[in-house]
Length: 104
Image (tube, rainbow, N blue to C red; front, side, top):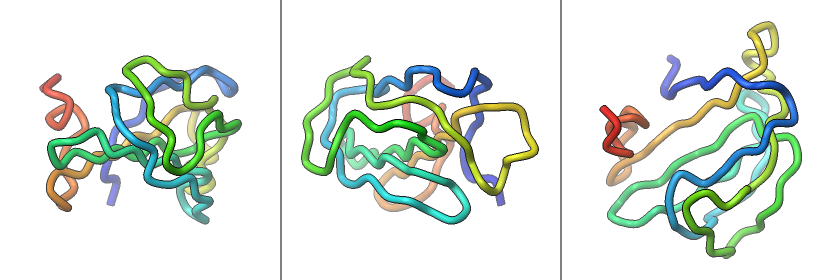
């Protein structure tokens, strides 16, 4: 299942944090590529997937619009146009990133 949204962009585009928070982890995933997970508070956690370069590490505090890295590739979606894949979790349940960020 596709549990997030895709934002078309060129490979190497800056990726900015959607809100203030704390970096929970930076991991490599066979399906999603390099993933930065940020706890944005109030039970909201956002996964920024398919990262290329990474400018943050676990425990770093970020603010809205902090450049956390650049886009790279998503192994499971490598035939798609270049994009950033974003997933959101609210109180440990996957939800629409647009809903989590109050954009829906």
